[in-house]
Amino acid sequence: QVQLVESGGGLVQAGASLRLSCAASGRTFSRYAMGWFRQAPGKEREFVAAITWNGANTYYADSVKGRFTISRDNAKNTVYLQMNSLKAEDTAVYYCAARLIGGSYYSKLDEYDYWGQGTQVTVSS
Image 1 (cartoon, rainbow, N blue to C red):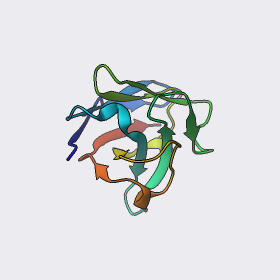
Image 2 (cartoon, rainbow, N blue to C red):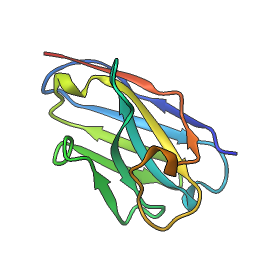
Image 3 (tube, rainbow, N blue to C red):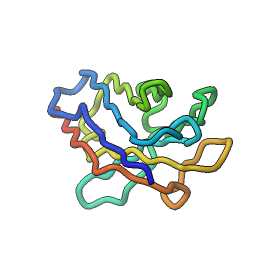
Image 4 (cartoon, rainbow, N blue to C red):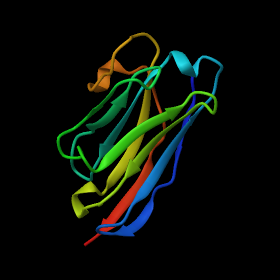
């Protein structure tokens, strides 16, 4: 069992930056592929970014490519999402997710085994 706790959300103006963190419990964090998703009001949850278990490979949704960066620190059991040049359309609840088995990165909701509770990001224009 893995518990994920997101933090770092908030209210910012367009163009600003935020860094989200996702702290994971358990001693096997380094074996998990991790991902970030988001859900805006009235919309389905969508993929944002993913990273392999060792951080060697990353993958991004086209909408955030070049602005967001996913990274991880396995010594701290934490995955990060650095968000730069934020836009109003980035407003959503952001969730981190973990997948136990797999040597790649994953972009579909049903490919993940565990989810956090989410953190709200609001970008004012």
